[in-house]
Every structure is written in C-alpha cells, then in structure tokens.
Image 1 (tube, rainbow, N blue to C red):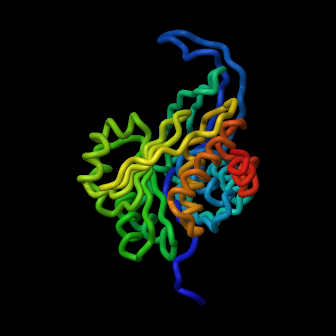
Image 2 (cartoon, rainbow, N blue to C red; image 1 turned 60 degrees about the vertical axis):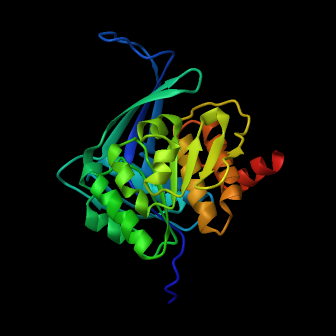
Length: 294
C-alpha cells in the first residue's frame, strides 16, 4: 500500500439547513410569512467536502454530529456525493442547524446553531487529515481543532487551505501553517487586510468578491484577477463553499493555482444556479462545460 498523500481531507462543520424563502428580512417583533424552501445538508465543512468530491477528487470529511435524524440526512448526502465521511456521533448534543432566509434576488441571511460541531476536538481533527495531499478547514468548529489540523497537515507535507469564515481574530495566529488563505472582502477587512495577512505568514491569499470574481494575492507578486462567470443566480447559499471545495480538488489533482481558481469560480457559479448548497448539478463535467464556454 502506498504512503503517498492523496486526495482532500476536509475538517469542519456539518449542519441541517432549514430554508425559508422570503422577500425581505423580518423586522424586530415582526412575524413574516414565507415559503418553505426545504431541508438541505449544509455547514461549511460538509458543503466544501461535497464540492471537492463532486469536482473529481477523492475526499474525506471529519465532523461531529448528533444521534438524531438530522445526522442521518447528512450521512446520506455525503454518501451520495462519494465522500468518505468520518462522522463521530455525540449523544450529548444535537446536530448543528442553520436557519436560512433566502431572498428573491438570490442573496441570503443565515443563523447557525453549532450543536455537535462545537465538540469536534483536536484528536478528531488530527486523525481526520492523516494521509491527505490537501487539507481544507474553515472556522465553524473550535479554533484549536482547526489549528491542529493545519499544523498536522503542514508537518505531513500536505498543502493546507484555510477558509477563514466566519472571520475570527484567532485565524491570524494559524497563518504560519496555511499555504492558501481564502477570504471574502468582509473577512479580509476584519482580519486586517492583505498586507497584514501576508506579514502574518500567509504566502497566498485568495480574495473572493462574489460577482466581482476573485483576486489572487501572492507575496511579492502583482495581484491576479479571475473574473466570475455571468449567471442568473437562484440561491447563493453555498456558492463560496463550492468555490473552496473545487479549489482544493483542483490543487489535489495537480492543477496550477491560476487554473484551479477558474475551476473554483465555475463550481461556485454552478451551485448558485440551483437551490441548496450541495446540488447534484455540480460535477467535474458541469465545471468543464462552464469553463469551456468562456
């Protein structure tokens, strides 16, 4: 059996997303009637793991869920996407849940109750990334566990990717173990800006700008712009996660980061044209088709 690192290992959150379609957010004290948008598997970690697998890379996912029916839904979603899931089940707390308000223009607002995600510990994280060529993490689980996963990945020679979402000041302390940092404009500003992120140890910062595309910032080099694909969005929930998962998959498959960013933009565009963050419409073929159409 080969000891060569392979595929993508994702450490992160797993939630059941409960979607309500509304024209606008409710005001304080207001009851607003909406339309049931459905129940979907979610959580940044799960979304990114599914996107990585659907983008063509062997993918493993490490997370903690409850012993409830919601956990069964998540397990089935991962299996359907071809993700090798290492879900530890906790009897102490329920599976994480996200309440998603989906607006008519395709934007959304999300409230997350962490539940079992808060129990993902250092041992879970380190075991979850063993043998991976690329390690991908976010910040919806305990920071100590994320830091341990990145450190273990770096020590083992993996390429490490951190999607610093939601933004947390503690992320800056991890950057010495991060090869590629992915942030949106709000997260970048909250963490002190591109120059501070480079100075803190992140050699490559990918700044996502929604419909404005992405900008690749490499220490000592001029920024490189990758344009977004022009689409009519249906639901942007999970588009950023699809971007991160597809980016990890492309890098695990040996693509240069410039090419990987284009494929990641395509993955985000595919997901944004469908309801739910883990749509089966995302595939290596659908990414290829969109990339070739440019």
